[in-house]
Image (cartoon, rainbow, N blue to C red):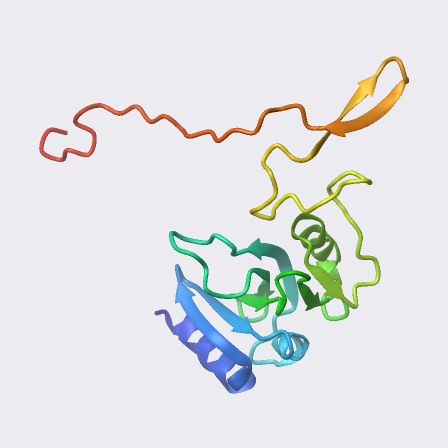
Length: 201
C-alpha cells in the first residue's frame, strides 16, 4: 500500500471511527461502507474535515447486488455508491451505503452537501428505484414519461415490458406489450484447439 493510501486510511479511521462498517483497499482505491443512519454525517465530515477534504462528488450510482458474483448475495440488495475527489489532497474515495429495505430502498439525499449529485440521484432512482429522501426534485431522467419499472434491476426483463411505435391509422405514438419472444442469448466462442497452450504457442 502506498504512503498516500496509508495516510488516507488513517485519517478516515481518525475522523469517522466506528461509523465505518467496512473498509477495503483494492486496485489502488479505498472503499468504505457506511450505515444509512450515519450516511449524511459521515459525508459532511468527509467534505468539511481538512485532513480529508473531499470537495467534489464526481459520481453516484445505484447497484443491485441480488445476483452478485458466483453465489447468492448474503446481504442487502440495493446500494448507493458515491465517488469522492479531494483536489487539495489529491486522493479519491468510494463510499457505499446500503438501503435497509429491499422492497422499498431508501437512502438520504446528498444534494444539500454536494449539489452535483442531483442528476446522479435521479438516475439511480430512475434505473434502480432507489428513493433519495430529501431530494427536492426526484423524478425520472432517462426513461420515457410513462415508463413502468426500473430497467437496471436484475429482475427486469431484457426486452422490457412495453414497446412504442407510430400508428399511421391513429397518427400518434402508441404503447403496446412487447412482441419479441423472450430468449436467452449464450455467446458462442470459437477458439483454436491450441488456445491457452503455452508450450505450442
